[in-house]
Amino acid sequence: MPKAWPQQSPTSPSSIATGPERTVTFLSDAMGIKLNRGTDGLVRVVDVVNLQPGSVILRKGKVYAGDLVREAGGVDLRRPITATMWGDTVALIKMVPRPLQLIVAKEITSEFAESPTTAAGRRRARNRAEI
Image 1 (cartoon, rainbow, N blue to C red):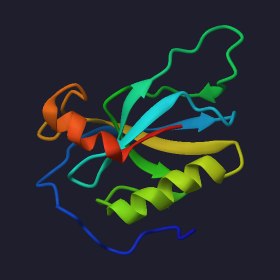
Image 2 (tube, rainbow, N blue to C red):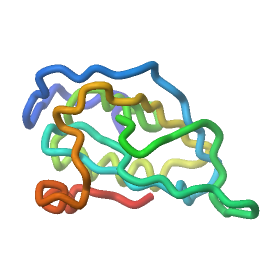
Image 3 (tube, one colour):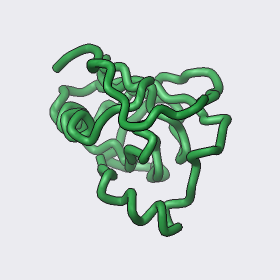
Image 4 (tube, rainbow, N blue to C red):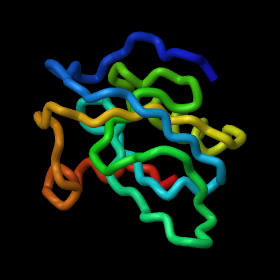
């Protein structure tokens, strides 16, 4: 797997402002998150399972629904990715040995932030991955 994708951009977002980047380390195969590649080509966390005592999901760090995924397993996702790259990214995240580090950041701009229950959110559902 490449450490950086070629510069391909399905649609370039005008400007995405983010908060500070945070590292989340996943120690178990089950990550308890759902990711979505938006129509803008950026990967976002759309759902996070709350950890319960005795859960099989082990992670260190905070991840929230709405966070932008900036890096996954050393692969830079700060630029928009194509649908093909998305498929490769999902495969990488599922196959990479644990611990796996994701770098995430809160999205400050809300131009593309949208509830998954809206019509546009339903159209994007095919670009989701439960990991």
